[in-house]
Figure 1: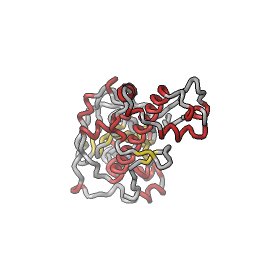
Figure 2: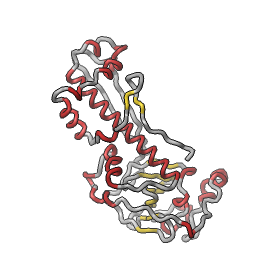
Figure 3: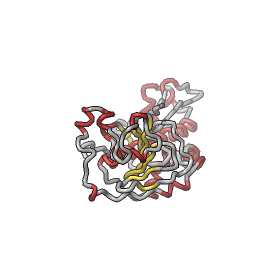
Figure 4: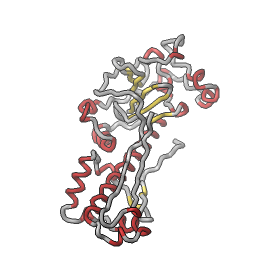
Length: 288
């Protein structure tokens, strides 16, 4: 499994004045879990549960409370899009109704499921140990007459297949435009907020870097940037007025579109008080 991390590498001090270059790599955190779903899957409701499963997929693939869930190689993963990117979910944070899915709906059950009742939930307490069982005490007990209704399926995603599957920076905007459902499960709601925060940060960094590239193309003779290394970062951030210059807007838009970045993703992002960092207007309340 390869975990991708945000990397922003701006070596201003090492840039020669004659040939300005910036080396940049930005990736959204996610997991490559070895599951490739090229088209939107058929999803069928699990009777008596607010959960869907995918009977035609040879994997443990579910949909619950507005997100897709996969159990793969002893780990749970979640995504707001049917083919990822997938985020790892620890055993202590898996939503209750995901834990309660009966064994029979796992299309690729692990070996240790053998012998367990097909109509009951997996014996997670046996698998994850007593400490987990104590923390999640009562996970397998609930009022079956008060089960919430299943979330609506985000069927708009059916039109995005193969090469038209959206880049990660576009997914959040498309979801906001086309899927109005808000998660009711506390754990799912928290993950959705964290994911939105990561998307906004991703979009901000992408556009910031593209903005810098445009600035460098037009200003590689600026001595304030290239002749005084200790002022490079501050000087660049203070001089990022290229979007107000004639012709530069279209250049930046073309760069953004080529890289699959939607500029609206980073609405509300502000440059930090040090003129270098970013103040992100999103908080995550882990006590909810």
